[in-house]
Image 1 (cartoon, one colour):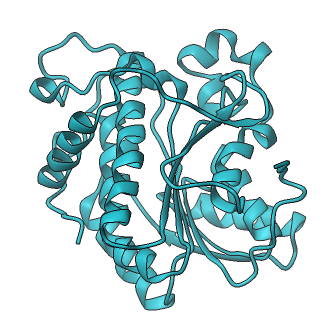
Image 2 (cartoon, helix red, strand yellow; image 1 turned 180 degrees about the vertical axis):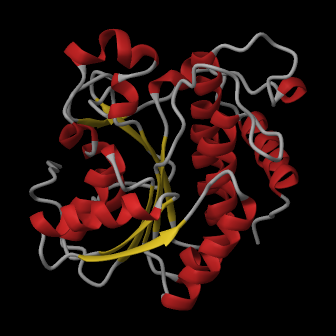
Length: 296
């Protein structure tokens, strides 16, 4: 079935959260959902930047239904406060886009509670956020969780003996790849959780490809080759938006550009031996222990 951003189904009446939506890929995802009449909550750390983003979006979509709630994914208290505020304002949640992320940080960084920054931001923060919103997601008919991963997951390793990078020499691309592997494993395991609970909520993973975001253009692989092979953000948003809105997608699916770095969204078949049920469950259990938040 043909799908495009232009022909994306109407989202009138739907409530969506997009993390990291003040810039780049998240901005475009939020804008297009708002263009289709969803109410979009911009979940970001810097509220001044969020307000500027809202002003910019409304120049394009004057009637956009936008809201902003502060969220810092490396701060458990901030995540809890975000969820409390969201649940006071809204009665349902149709779409959760786990988009915000740290990308190829040049030096090893740890959060105040000691977690490595890529894994803390990209996986653990979103794990905790999703866990705290799971009840609302399952009460909302046909809700969806879209977790942004990357083709770099292939180079990732979940090293439970050195999860915080305290023993290994730090390598920024490997640390990023580890977190993207965690994103993919979480997405698959989350679908199994929804199915066990008898919910029709869908969990999907999306890889935007190599896109012309500021983060990718100025760090890691993006800094070297991104300037000439990266796709515009508009194209990078296609896979996440397809997962969030297309009527034909199935839970547990993974969509990415057909040629990985670029191309139209296509369903991916993950054959890598690294993606196992055992590893996904072990990461799930470990994440519950680290965050102190359990699903259900």
